[in-house]
Image (cartoon, rainbow, N blue to C red):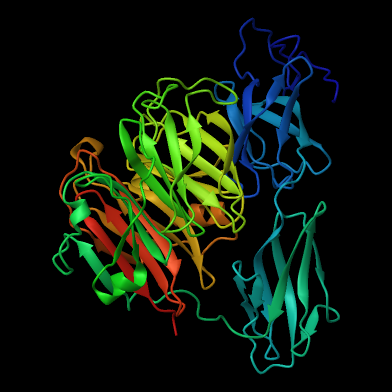
Length: 555
């Protein structure tokens, strides 16, 4: 720092500052303080939407941050609480070296701090954001990037070669390599791939000279198989006449109805019989089912297996109060109790809570995965590990960041560590297995709000599917409705939801079940693919009935 000849203003013996080189009289209480009281990184993480608080050390004039490696450290954005009237000298700082000087300006005064950045271990595989190609005519255009099939469609059919003039990745510091070609020119005979490496995490995209393909379902050509109150369909299915059926699931082969209408009658309806207009019921064997406030309450289908829980209003030890989960390997099986919970989770006691209003089961083809319950008040989550379809272990209590009362759902996205967490009284939240929040959609972004939300992939397009509930106490006056939204725009699920939040959020398709107001506003979705390759979607709700809609592929 330049040593001033003239007398300068001293604000604090701990404060490093510079004034203009002019003689001024000394005052005891000068204005123009240049302190940093708190500072946050505002563009953290892969998406650039995460916020991280820094640690301010006034004595050393430093602010320390621990942020994800995926953060754009070439243009790190910060904001926070500064002295009254003060501002930072830049909108963004380059901290690729691990630190940067930051200046606090207030009039003629300047406070100098050092930003020190520690990067966490990388955890996000790199993604393509943009590929620009130049054809033989010299014109440049953006290629179409499909995240679903990891292919870049260059849109130069008939050309023998094409020059790739720009590749933009996330994170920015990703190392990019073309496997074929020379000087960024690739041939139609063997275009090769784009390889990406971000600090050891790798991904690749295939190159194709083809134009943007036609993907997804044709939502203008849906065929509806309706057993709801909608006057366009058949009569409401009898199990939904009252509020005794609060859980439904569908996997493309069968519809599961957890019915207490007139007794204990859990049942499967085959899709083929639903499509034919005369649903054929297979009532599941209920031998040995006993205990709980309700002996059956919530159910799910997983890889063709059936899971149904009872409901307990005060979980405790004992046949009448313990939570139970029953399993049927197929429609003709005798049920077996695979899980009994008396309130003792592996990490904390959950005695006295209400469980069984909801059940979520997410399993792979080997029967391995997770089972979730959310308490009625939505303040606690019980997660269990499942192996081999019937081995349930490690009950773990989780406190979610968002409360989702009553008929909550936790549905896995594909096969990765992402789950959609919803209820009729909660926004859509993307979480990981441990309920770390990955993205939260504003509750006003979706109708009613929708519940049992699922993010699915069909024919290389990504959709958000949900069904709304209806009850005065949740502030919903619209009929129970199945909604489908396009989430294809986004390199990953969180980015897709972020793009969706910023869009007009118009549904690709909606269908009303036209049900009345409910005191138990349960609503469900389900999906599958028919033997002919059509997309099948199901919506169901208490006192509304159900409908299955079949959509062909786009042509």
